[in-house]
Length: 226
Image 1 (tube, one colour):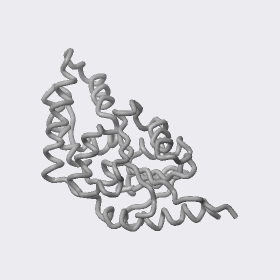
Image 2: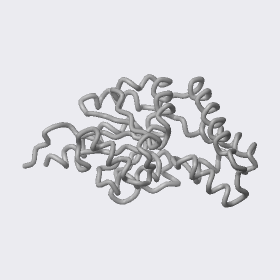
Image 3: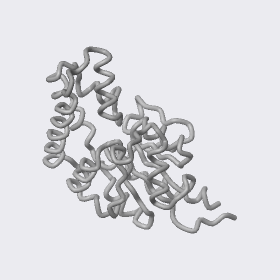
Image 4: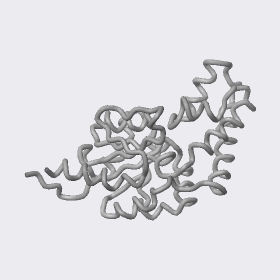
């Protein structure tokens, strides 16, 4: 029988997994992108672009409509970030059931691994009082210069935490994050908020509510140590 020397390392996505920021971001993008002559709606973000890097979204829209003028992207991104931070500080809440789930998982080392900038991650954790669970273990794609679905983002986070991929569990709600976790050779739990529209990929464990997370982690731990 194999025995794990230490608890599994839990690598959490941020937006849509820890905090209910996706609809706020969708609305902010739906407001600001048309101001730069890039047609866009909140619904479009939710249906097509959840979890995708902002620069990639803009590039996709530019290819469909028209290119931004030189220097406009910086103004667009700065405006989007400022509006989003204001909305988060005023309105952001944790994903239902997540604070209690994190308390139940207190023996596991944890980190946040996000496609968003570190400032946004910190704002999200401060606004929802979840930061104490992660002891400043925050890994931003903007800092590491690699974005999901590239598995290297999760691999770099695992290495920094001192864990091999097989001893890590990725918890992510978006397709790009689930894909990255599986490609990184990690256990993956897909927090599927839209079970009627999204299918959990083979190899990942699907749950529909954060309250199911501790039991799912326990099942993975049992399988690893069996």
